[in-house]
Image (cartoon, rainbow, N blue to C red; front, side):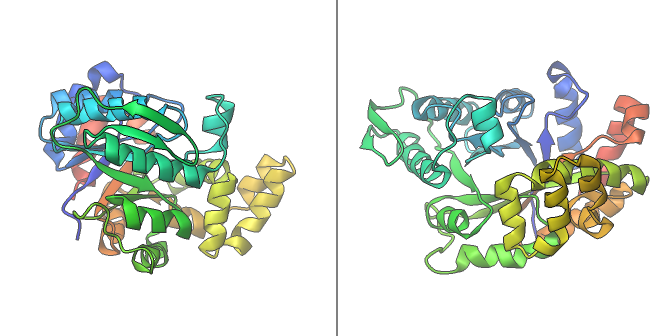
Length: 333
């Protein structure tokens, strides 16, 4: 059973400048971990830098920093600075991200994502240990780079992974894996790949963390939750990487009508084709205590760090900060 319990930050609707109170409320409620994401909101590191200063006991992690949108040296410098600010409390999660984020929004070619991720993982392992890197990798070259301020405690490096190839890489060379967009019932299939040869879940020799980002909509209004969830499922599971992931998980028959309608440009039909059962598997919703118990199912299935991603609800919108303060203890373990 997990002894760590995470929340994705920053929370929506709360300015970053006001997050000192949010971080205090989270840790006071029993959340041990604060994890950031990087899509089109804040960058992955600024919220965690604030958390490092405002909550000196909280554990921090990125889920994820894309391997394409920063050069190797800059990503190492950014990670090293946060590791120095929060020694022993920061885990660097990296991943390939998507063609939209990398190509459409950051004007970088999203080519050879597996190789780029592998090469960045190997570069970061060496650079964050304070060693000089002078290496020709398959997807980039680094000449005579050494961190001027290598962290006293190098951060663990976790790898975002969906299907067997990336799962095997995470198990063989990283310190943990980051999972996303899966049901608790999918975990046996996914975790089997982390221990199947040649994957051994060894990383650099320490504990191997299994982090799962879990979308949580804590409301008793099931219609609202499912409407919100359908929009998210349609937006994410039509992305090729996630579509292939769910094919591998065995959901092709369920999702084929969604994919066909989406490809035809019929967004309304795509949303209508998403069944309630799929929504209820992939998006946690219900009363806060029900949500907490659903997230605990991930922990019981093998996730060591369940990380909630809190979605807006009618109750939070109407109640503001007071509603949030009342909610967090009900979601905590």
